Image 1: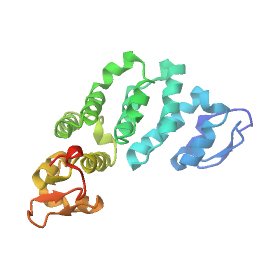
Image 2 (image 1 turned 30 degrees about the horizontal axis):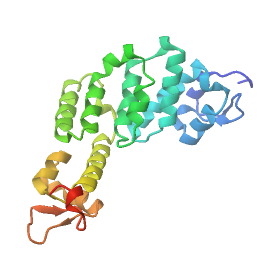
Image 3 (image 1 turned 180 degrees about the vertical axis):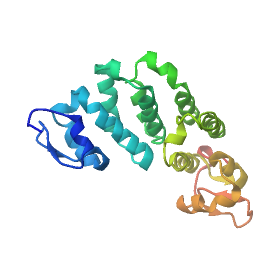
Length: 231
């Protein structure tokens, strides 16, 4: 591969190539976040031929539960520059990863980069984001599981994103930690879409404790003012 020419086909082989940016890149099955960052810092950042590599990297994020917001924003920028190459499933994948990043504002940041004509096909992800933003967690789980059931044969929706339930539960737990002084086990189970018997790891991870006086009550914050908490 000559210097000064970018050829995505080179990524098919597990060999190194030398790009115009001066960095060596491995085939995309082995692409690391560092290599992607180096690639985006080069002249190829706005080259449409970079899209197959970046789309494959997004798929890797979905499969392995990793996350690279900058890389995903770069895809959206390329889609704005080359709208004829935009793919609905890639838009969806980027938004699914952003959903898993709550409470960060990544979802809104990504939506700003998606043309309105494409947003109409992303209503499921938008609905889930709205539930998370308004802390309607039981409604979120109901809609999420319904979407997965409806799309189980289509290969779309949250089922594409490895680790999504764990990520959302971490967000829910963070909201509980900041807004509750204590919470009943069954109530917490509903918010997390878990069985009461499966709460112990979450309780331990967040440093909560069981009440000594009520075995069904979880103490979230022992020293919290009443005005800023929910009993």
